[in-house]
Amino acid sequence: MRTTLDLPDETFRQLKAQAALNGMKLKELVTQLIQRGLAAGVKPAPQAVNHAGQPPDPPPVAIQRMTAEAAATGLAPTYPIPIAREADGTTTPYLSNAQLYAILDEEDLSQYQRVLSAASGQ
Image (tube, rainbow, N blue to C red; front, side):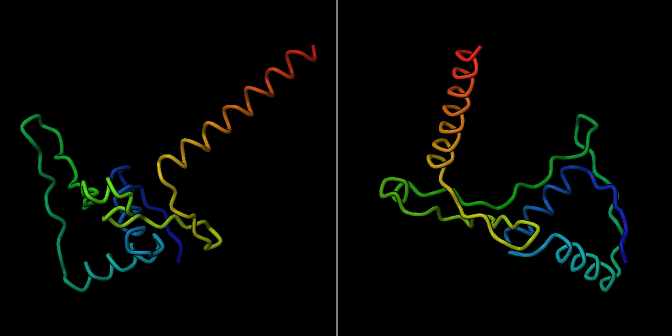
């Protein structure tokens, strides 16, 4: 059965991150959490507020930072990298920040060259 839920943005971000960390689809995680809640008979807790009268900040996603040794030797991070899955099930490979910046620089350069060629063609 299909349904539509209106979730707060932060709750949705946490669900997506948790699903990625567990290598699950979002649908699978939500179904599992709902089934657990129903089985436990848990009633929703009243929403807490902080001293500013706003809901408290959500707990951070548990990520261990890279150790100084690992950073110096260039080893892989010690925290789990979320697996990005496309709609067809293929996974997007992990890229380092340097690789991402190189891709962005390459795109910027090609766009700049297109603008120059378009300007010289006028």
